[in-house]
Image (cartoon, rainbow, N blue to C red; front, side, top):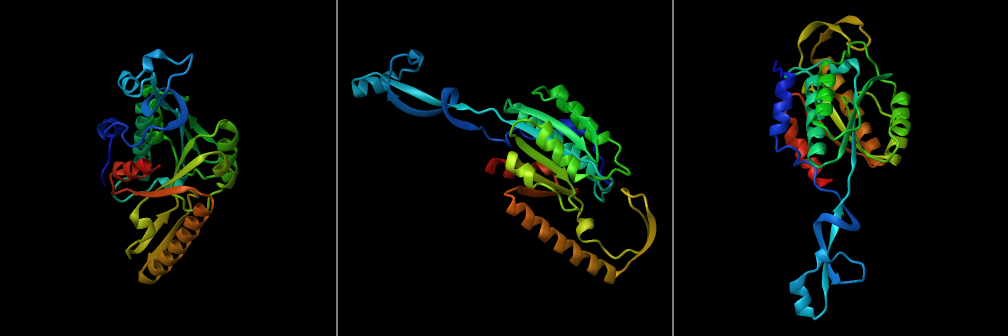
Length: 278
């Protein structure tokens, strides 16, 4: 199994183009931003520093360059820390989640956006300050990597209450979980722009027949002997596929963007593509 240390996760995340994932967010309000908007006639009170002298000569009247200003956004990441995150064939899902937190955080910081992380189960496990500072992101990444998750289970009513009342203003909200239970996102999606990121291992969706096994559920801590034969694998795979179809349908109904990241993948590749489209 591959294992990445905290320092490796931070270094790799910074190396991955450090924030090119999120594009700039332009508003229609004109200001001293970066994106060129249009040439228009000068009006009394306008900033004379924006006069375009070439266009003024061509038209015979003073012309002004106007710009779109950059619209600052607030990025919140909710890491849902159920016991089921304590699993992985290629690497642990918790480790992958920590790397996703680092990538999203560095992306926000590079774009001068505020970033915050909350780790939730049936209670608040950790909450970072809303900040643009790398030190806060580093702490958030470390907490994600080291947070005790064995025997933790999710309470979607608590998660919904946090997203609606703790996060005061409409924000860009990334929700990280393996999503092996149906979420409660209806009200959250009405307030925030939500992106669901499923953190999974391929074995969880399509297991192989391994014969007789002793299994301990990391959420309930229940132990049992299971015969993982071809018949059980087939039945499980069909049931899991049906659940994922229901989940996909639910997310589409709520207008929620989603993506899946697996433990054998470099998360940057998929994250960069979906965020550039947003």
